[in-house]
Image (cartoon, rainbow, N blue to C red):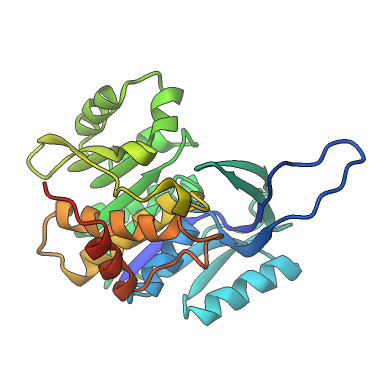
Length: 297
């Protein structure tokens, strides 16, 4: 095991259409995609596509959607350590004009304790705040062993505040800032106070406000993808997380600016494709995006 991801599994149904029907109205969608979903889960698949296959602790139901998810994981050779739930969770995603509306149906009533794994050879742990008991257990264990810990703070979930005390790299969404009534700069101060060595707030097309290993705050601009090329922004943040983990695994001696620039290009690739699976880039795809949308800092 070189990396461990922990999160909640969804099956994402992404539908591209001009408008949603109401009442007895019927419409035909322009396109659709069915894929794996969930923050850390999608990040794990992105990391695998980029050449570093992680282990994954994820919710799995014994139903046809759960079996479909496990079949997807086998395709990417991702070892899944399942935590049983009664029913699979679904996300219905409707991308439009650079935004995305999401309707979720979730079962997070776990039927089993979380799996206990040997992490002695693990190099990085990535969490999304789901499965709080498993997240805090492994974050503490990794801190004791000097293993890097990474967090996708998409929202105020469970024991997130306690978890932050054991996180090295915390990249959170503006949604968390809103939930905690903090400005992005105040959120960075909060992450520093919690002991996070590197912290950031993702701001969609405005890029990411973040601080580096020295504590210096700066803005990482988003790549200038033309609006007409943007198809589906859902999952872009998850691909970003999976990509910087892959970049770290490939070059741990490099700075996190390097890893985040790589991840930024991976996220730019994602938003030009419908659905999570179609939006997973290879390393050649990332290099192509970097050449196409090169910025000078």
